[in-house]
Image 1 (tube, rainbow, N blue to C red):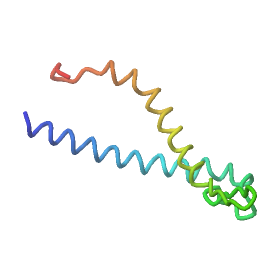
Image 2 (cartoon, rainbow, N blue to C red):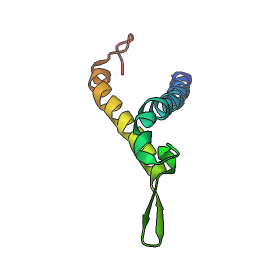
Image 3 (cartoon, rainbow, N blue to C red):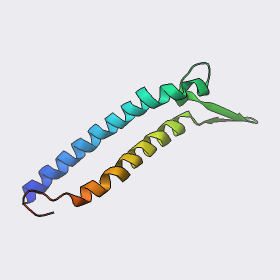
Length: 93
């Protein structure tokens, strides 16, 4: 039983890492190009800077990671009800 839990944990870590790469690619390749005209002449949202007085705020990376978090949260929110209804083949959870 313990070996089965270790394998399940390892698979969950691998799937989580793969999903992280997938969501990063979705944000980088699909969402950010649509937002690039708003950023600057460079067109890179990740390098967006706001200057307030003498303070330079690098908010581009914050926006990118916020979008990534929002996409992951939306996918998990939509998928969670289906995962709660899932019953494994052996009948145990």
